[in-house]
Length: 177
Image (cartoon, rainbow, N blue to C red; front, side, top):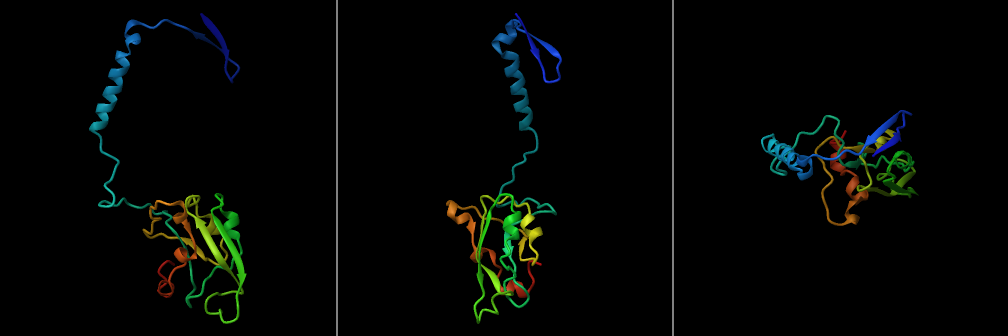
C-alpha cells in the first residue's frame, strides 16, 4: 500500500508501508543499541556537582539577586518612576509611589519615592532590563554570589523593600557599586 503525501516544499513523497523483518519485530537490535548508549554514559565525566560542598564557577556576565541601592548619604535612590516595571518583560516588578513627608529628607533623595517596591522572583527571568532602564541607577542585579534562596512557600519569593534595599553601612562602603 502506498500513500502520496505533499510536503511543505511542494514535492511529492511516496510513503510506503513495508513489512518488518523478524529482527525488527522482536525489537532486539533496538534494545541492544539503547543498552550500548546507556553503558557509554556510565564512563563519561558526570555533569552533576555536589552542592553545597562544591560551588560551580559563575559566568563573568552572571546576574544575581536584585538590590535597591542607596546613595553615599544612605538615602534611597529609587524615585518610583516605574521605568523598571515597564521594561520588565515578565511583569515581575510592582511599585506604589508616594510623596516624601517633612522630616524624611534623610531617607529619600527626591520628593517622590517607592513606598511599596516588590519583585516576584518566581516570574523574574534575570534579564537585566530593569537595571538598564533605571535612570537613577537604583536597581542592580548583583555580580556577587548573592543567590535567591530556595523556599517552600510562593509568598516567600515576593521580595519587598525589606529584602531588596541594601543597608546603610553597605551603601557607605559602596559594596555593590
